[in-house]
Every structure is written in structure tokens, then in C-alpha cells.
Length: 176
Length: 171
Image (cartoon, rainbow over all chains, first blue to last red; front, side, top):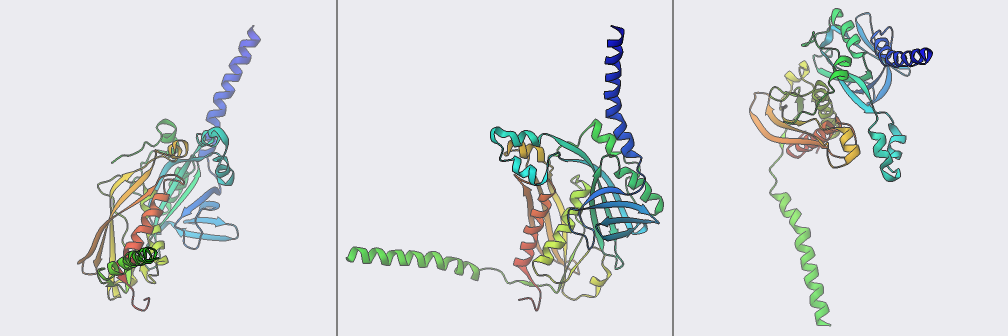
């Protein structure tokens, strides 16, 4: 009886640990972070997958053999946010829409939470650019915290961690 | 035989009227305004709380679509090179309405969860004289992420620019 109770307790503890540990690990970013560049980086295609890293006062994005740099002191605004995307996306996601009895729609219910990082920066001529990245939950805030001491500006320095906000209160629809 | 001939003539006249009406409509279009270059100001959203990614996506898509429409010189907000351009047209955009919608709701229900953005576009000369003002909206109703509404807006706004402005040497 005692061993059964112990087994149940260990199981419950493991479950909670499984839920908490990945978030904790996600926030301890060291090195490049896998991101998707949604739009905005000069010379990089939309929705390009790559890695993002802050090094030597630069935001360094690598996509395949190509890379793109934005100096931290040219960044006028860094904003983090929370979003979600389909767990099953791409071609498979599109094909699933044709599944009978609304099977594809059921798949649409399963979504993974992601962070967004929006950066506004000026080029050499003073022209304003904007770039949007999506990345694993908990990593956007870390990149922002690395960028700000190196010269990047932000109007919301005390912004709450998107990981924390998305866990407690997912972004609600704004109707205006 | 006459009845068939009469019917044929009527059909011909009817076709002529319908085909001629767009030609007549084109004559009433206002003349295009000369724009040697366009400068796009950053999207403003003081009254409406707009997520930063939407603001940036609106701006970037707008610049891209204007370039696609054939405007060879599209300057960004703050670009120093624009200061010396004669016949510069500046595009100021202010968000007037925003409904974030939900991609999940769209995919599950098809009919709900649409994302929509309404932006007031004002084209001015470099001395701030208003040349054209128009509300343009962007929507995503069925497929795609919420940011796709910004692409829809950009396409429509670029179309408005193309309808009302011309770049010398382009046409």
C-alpha cells in the first residue's frame, strides 16, 4: 500500500517537474537561439529559419550560409511578445484540413506557444527598419536583456517576461 | 427571320453599352499626381493599442508593396536622402481600428476570428500639404496568421498610391 502511494507521489512529482523544467531551461539561453525571421531583415527572405545571437554589440542572424547583423546601438526599440502557432503546420497542416469529419479542425486546436521579438533599427542613411522574429518560449526576453546593456533602446524596459504572461494570461483579442 | 435579326441587333447594342461603360468611367478618373519619390512614415497608433509586430509588419509590407507597384524610389522613415528630392510625396499612416482576431478560431470555425485593421492613409507633399486622404483596411478571414492582415492592407494601400500618383519615366 505504502509503495503504491509512493509510486503515485513520484509520478505526480515527475509530471510537475516535466512541466516546470522545460520553461526553466528555455530561459537559460547560452549561444544561438533557433528563430524564424518573419519579415524585415535586409537581404533575408521572409519566414527564413536561422539562429539569432547577441555578440560583440550586434544582433547576429544566421540563415544557411548567409548572415545579417544589426548593431545594438542602431536599435531604437526592442519589444517582446507572446503568440502561438499550430502544432502541426506546413504542408501536413494544410493537408489535414481535408481530413474527414473535421479531423483537421481538431488538429488546429493544438497550438504551441512562442515568443516574438520585434526590433526597430536605423540604417546608415537614417532609414527606419523593422524586423520580427519568432522563437521558443522564454528566449525573447533573454535576447532583449542582452541587447539593452549593449546600447539598444526600449520604451518598455520593465516589460514582464512574455513566457510568464503567456502562461498566466494568454493575449486576449482586442476589439476596438 | 426578322425576329432573329432584331434579337441579334439588340444583343449587340446591349454588349456595346456594357463594354463601353468602363471606358466612359475611366474618362472621369482624376488626373494622377506627380510623385518623383515616396517616403513612408512609421505607422502611428497612438489611440489604438497595436502590438509592435503588427506596427512593424504594416510598415515593412507597405514599403515592399509600393516598390512592387513600380515606385522606384521609396524612402523609409527618417531617410536623409529623401530631403533633397523634388516632388516627394510623404505617406502618413494612422491606425484607426484593430481587431486582433484568432487564427485558432478561424481554423476551427471558419466563420469567426477574423483579424482586421483600418488605417487612415494621408499622402502629403514635403511641405505637409495634404494631397490625398483615405481609409484602407486589411483583413484575414479564413487562412493564414493574424499578420497576414498587414499584407492585405499593404496591397490595398499600394494600389491606392498607384491609382493616384505617377512617377515620371514609369508611365
